[in-house]
Image (cartoon, rainbow, N blue to C red):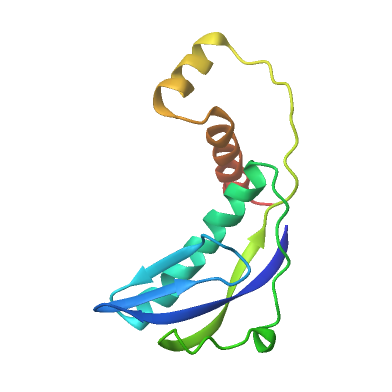
Length: 129
């Protein structure tokens, strides 16, 4: 997975702040403080990229922060680069599992593939090399 940095713009929104990503339409986050909004931005971009990859959509390349023009209609308070790991290409694989194990997974998860991928990531992270 490649590390990417997407530009984010934080604006005033009511009593708090909202964040949007010019390169990622529909990807937003918010916080009651500027600090909270900035921290929430990372989770938003990670989730957005994962959803795009899961649906087989092309992941947009991040723009340079300096190339994004100001919109005078936005009450902009900050710009920042938000770090994310760009998900790799999704591959289809065939697995053989006991039927009872599949039933147990399906009872606790809405997405079998995501459940198995998360379990594999946790197991790999727990390994010491």
